[in-house]
Image 1 (cartoon, rainbow, N blue to C red):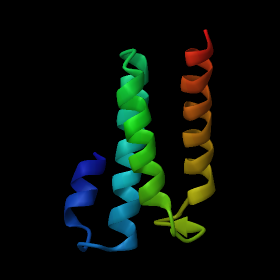
Image 2: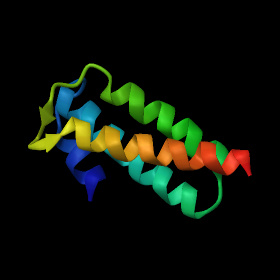
Image 3: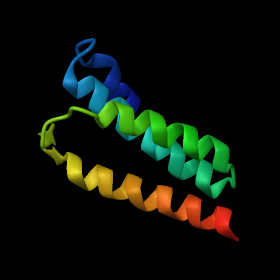
Image 4: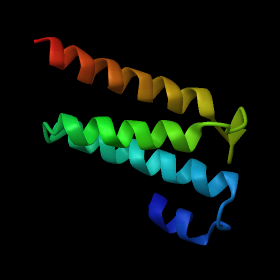
Length: 83
């Protein structure tokens, strides 16, 4: 669903970068379920880069809420490394 939204957004817009970051986070969560920690890490880096410089809210979604989910995912992956 997010890909369809991403496709119609203006190139290089804040909205397009934000939606791409959300897509990357969703993909990272999928890779976590697939037990692919390296892919999760790479996607988390990409997601964070896409959120960098975003305003407080984009398309009615609080950027902080996406960052909280990203932080939690990164903590789980780092916690798994400690095992």
